Length: 284
Image 1 (cartoon, rainbow, N blue to C red):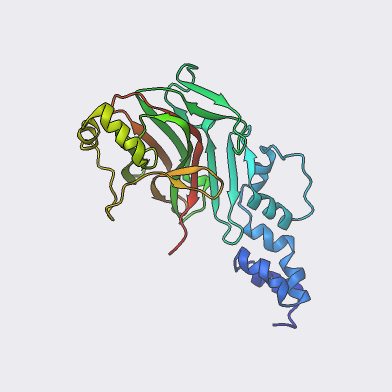
Image 2: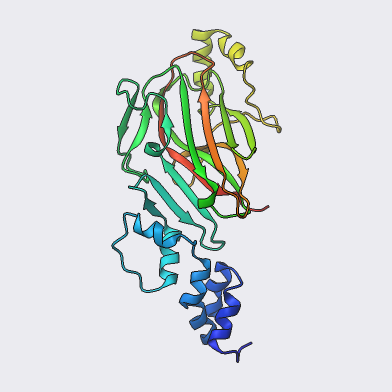
């Protein structure tokens, strides 16, 4: 193997994975040169990478190699007038998207008395939506499977924060859903904030047993018996899992993702919404 010509080594690496190509430089100088070749990295780039770059905020950038383009996509790329974020996993090449708050549907988001838009310092986008007050919460997004990696299990996640002045978020569980036009259907429920025992005691004073009565209408406990609620992310935000779906080679499907809380009729507010992330679920 050490005596193989560079072109032959490049052909071999093109049938492996990005992780193998990155580590090939440690084998020999021939492997390092082959592992840097445009021929290899063209195989790992998404087929529509040129279109992605042309519609990105970075479209004037000049790249010296296909490997540099790949690294750029690993770091993420704002596309579609900065309303979406595109990213690929460095080692697998699997595609992820984040749909910004402006790219999804949020109840009353165009009414200033119900929702405000502002720049949040650690957001990926220029604007995030803060729910001020509403008695109905509906958040919906959609994505075509053709822009994702084929034959891959995906999860959809609402990226959000809860403000210090939040209220009415854990009286009734919200319902989550991921549906595809081709028949995939994944439903669940979740609370919109994490359990705070002190607030729970205060609510019992004001609401009595109304919380228990309303929660009975929507079950929000997982199979492990634990309460479903937002989970912390590495970027400082929280996420709520909306559901899962699978992409298939050659299939053009539309996936609709949603979170709704319309059964409690109580006022709620204090959620900052950054968007919906669609990312591959790692194999266990």
